[in-house]
Length: 277
Image (cartoon, rainbow, N blue to C red):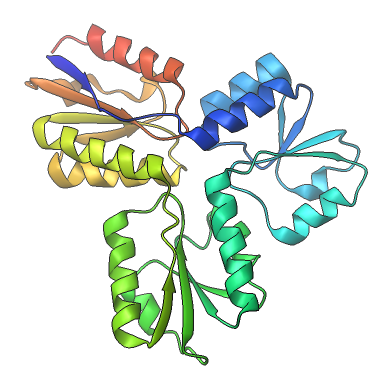
């Protein structure tokens, strides 16, 4: 069985930046998991003494607090900055952008629509910058339940969503409302990884998607791969691999989410190579 890697996969700019910040800021604590990858979080804790706090209520007595790549709500950030804690902001610049857009557009009287998962930490952070709140939706059905009072709408996306689904949301808004400002805040790495995953899944007969099971961008990659290759599986480590997945397969495609380091990808590829097909 041949093993083929996607043309674009793994660590994105924002994650690389956050990891480097954490490694250079030893004996610190992150507000929430720095990235959505438990294996890498464990490595940072064991090798650099970077601990993970659930929220800012646990930051009392902490010397250094690192803001996660997904960002945190605006009020929480302000509280930390005004405390005695040294704050190191590792929020991805691609996440900072929709935060700034929501704040600016709401100041200008626009109602804010965020395409994304309301429970995702990135979306919670972005939403907090909308002065009068925001509508968070994942489908046109949810969008149709909203009563817009001003008729001026600004829409942004969670950075790791599918482009095709964002287009559905924006097309619906544009055809139903007079003034709609669309800001494409899906990051470049998401575009590239999704396109590469789609291309790989079309030719492979089994695909392994590597990443945290709570990672939005990894789940999106898995969803795309399953559209074209039904035997697509999401794994966090080599322990999740099932030898039966590879029975009778000729080409195994491998891709990885933006929070997946190379050392995990390599371990999984080595394990797949050992499996007797």
